[in-house]
Image 1 (tube, rainbow, N blue to C red):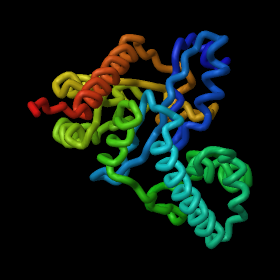
Image 2: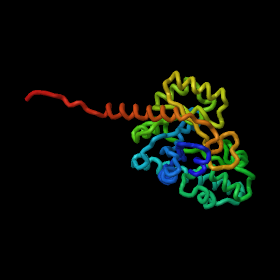
Image 3: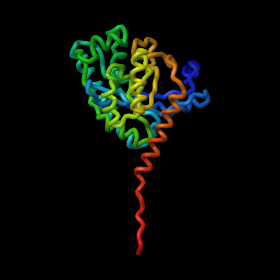
Image 4: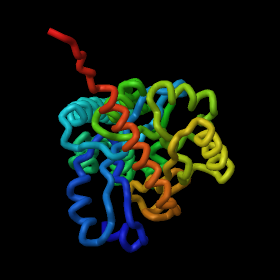
Length: 271
């Protein structure tokens, strides 16, 4: 949060994969610094090309439905991590599950933690090499992730007061595809991302305008000092505050519609 303040940010969304556990601590740290923390989470869902990441903004962290889902997802991620470590060991590499767990800490186990463990062991020079040689899709230690449907995630996010935004779609973000996602409950599209060119951002923005979707953006910072093309430094991208205003307005609109649809009219009659 101190780094966010130094970067001149007035608000950030903490979007760890499959957990909201860091949000309360971040909010406490951010308050005296004048940095607002939005409770959020990054979900993985099925997609025609394999995997779609969905940013859930404005979540109610204490909602038991959300936490039960995230607990189930983290358990599946840990099983996947175990399988990747087993494959790496079969390749003759000196790596243990404890190495990965230490890197993950209290967070959800993911491939970046496996990659960092490989770097720690001196097996690869950096995280990118770990993906390219061992754990990237199609590599010897890659394990497919069990994924929920987009509909299940968007329904859950809306039930707990949030918005669902498709993350870093890149070339997958065609208008027909995004229209299909809208039919499955999507509220918006992340248009500004380190992996998006100016042309991709402009195209996604036009599609969002036509489909009446909200837009978002972010650095996708994972704490690394070397970012590659998928991540930027915290505060490394300029995100207009007006985008946050529109996200909040859509959240309020969704909540109003949800409350209205759940209200049951009382029939009047005579006795």
